[in-house]
Image (cartoon, rainbow, N blue to C red; front, top):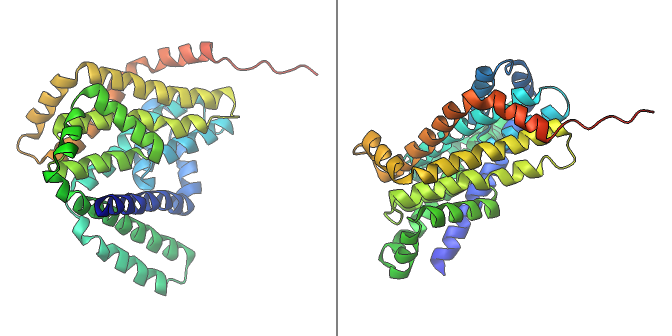
Length: 314
């Protein structure tokens, strides 16, 4: 019971930090980031770069894609421009898994303390918002550290180890990753938990990669919900995000064993948590590179499948 409570507490802290971090950064950079996306998405490569950078700044691919859907719905950018941003957001979100893979959780009270001191003396709104960002970063890593310490006793729990071993099956692992992401509405948290369990030798590399693949699918749920009552252009953005992730995941499952061998070859003697983070980054990067030549074709297909509604003649 103590383990369960600590895991729930750690996960709650992580989700609290992720949500508030995203909202605070949108407050701090929101209008600027909207202008950046509308100005810097003139071509596909610029859109990919913009999507990646803004996602790194906001630390949430879902927030960036939802913002993109809003911009498409308002006519500020086109569906074609949004496709680059969506693919870039998928690259940008992998940076968080690289940071999570670093063993810095034990130092998390430091940014919390620094942020609190800064907020205490802050007189300007921008300084206060920056202090909150620092605090939420600290809470995010403290939540992960709490989970990491909580699951340590499970190393000797036979039933838990047996269950975790089943995740090595690509379909079971990816299904679990998708379900967890659907429930907690954060692919970063799902991948973060996988990395945390791997750190404690409770999750193998195949299981961690399978969960990561599923998390990529589960994250599509909130962006698809954001398209409700939007126009056809915005709906196509949400559908493209889902299609992009689904096709990449299917390819990942088909080449699953070969992909694991590739990660082991590239990563060498790196830790298992670093290998999972590397697999996350390489997977999304390879998906974007693979999709780039087919963007015009996908645009044509979605335009035919979801044509603009004819305006009623008065």
